[in-house]
Amino acid sequence: MRALKLVGAAGLTAVAIACSAVIAAGPAVANPLEPTPIADVFYAPVPDLEAKNPGDIISSRPMPPPAGFFDTDVWQIRFRSTNSAGDPIAAVTTVFSPRNKVPGGPLLSYQHIINALGLECAPSQALWTQDPNLIIREAPALMVALQRGWTVNMADHLGPTSAYGAAKLGGKIVLDSIRAAQRFDPLQVQQSPVALAGYSGGGMATAWAAALQNEYAPELNIVGSASGGAPMNMERMARDLGFNPHPVFGLAFAAALGLEREYPTRIPISEQLNPLGQQMAAELQNACTNDIIAVGAGKSALQVANSTDLINSPEMVAAVNENSVELYSGVPKAPFFEWHSPTDALIPVSAISNTVARYCAAGVPVTELLVPSNDHLTAAVLGLPQALEWIDARFKGVPAPSNC
Image 1: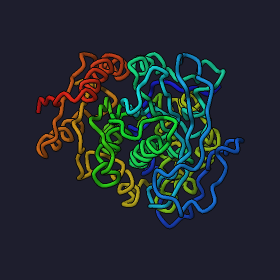
Image 2: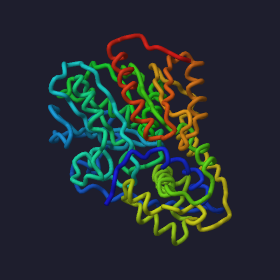
Image 3: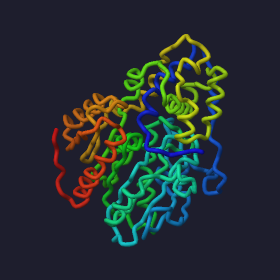
């Protein structure tokens, strides 16, 4: 069975190594395995999408509250966004509207961790599954926000091809999902203050949305962003891991395949796989976390490549670096809260430190919280309550502190 678990950074740690291992010398024609489309007219192709502006609403529908959510109205909104090549795409967000809210009350955009190449693993689908392994685990934390009267926005931030690993894409989709939510009259959030939050892969989408706001969506009233355990430099993570067999190599391989979906002409991985790699890619085409881990357990990049002549493709490195927020020159427009374990084994803490230092130097109020745990997932649980309290203060207009 597919599963959606809180495993984020590990799936991105080896993406650059996985890419470089399967890109051999010579030109290749990209033929990435796209996910199977969802058999639901709500997700059907959209004509004349280029005529719409980012954040414009394509369609919407009410949904029954999923398991674990109470006293809440739920909507799904399909909207126009932009991919990494600058082309228009149709994306989806799920919005939870508490029945005790006031018009214009706070809007929290929460970026869930999505480790997947399958579209059924995204929140807009996984929230309503009957498979207990696929149900999103964040309901208790999100219910805290909903009970405070906050509207909660949860985008499918991997996009319409589930481009796992394409983190900058996720930032654009998040910003456009906020635009769409604020343009959707039934939610009554047109004038709401907005905050962002997410951990690990969700933290990376959050960090990218915060960093891109000045350039991509400067009109949004984002009062703060809270990003935890985010892998802010994917190439550095990959080089730290190396080429040895790894228990979660499947996640790294899936991220490489996801990047190919987003950059098919720049990193044509599929054409460079050996028979084992082709078999694994087919098995991962629509997979969620548990299946991805099972398929790749104990494997390595060298085992899936068509050639052992490893090449650090400039195009591959450029694509990976384009999705590393540490290397992006922009800084958040709003105050920034960041939490992580100082000894996290899955992510390069130095990349977080460098990013935070750059934000501080640019005058961004930053609160950095070091969580007393060396476990990536435990740090998520320990830091989230303080992140929500920090967000609550921003919604109340309290000046943001800084420990730069």
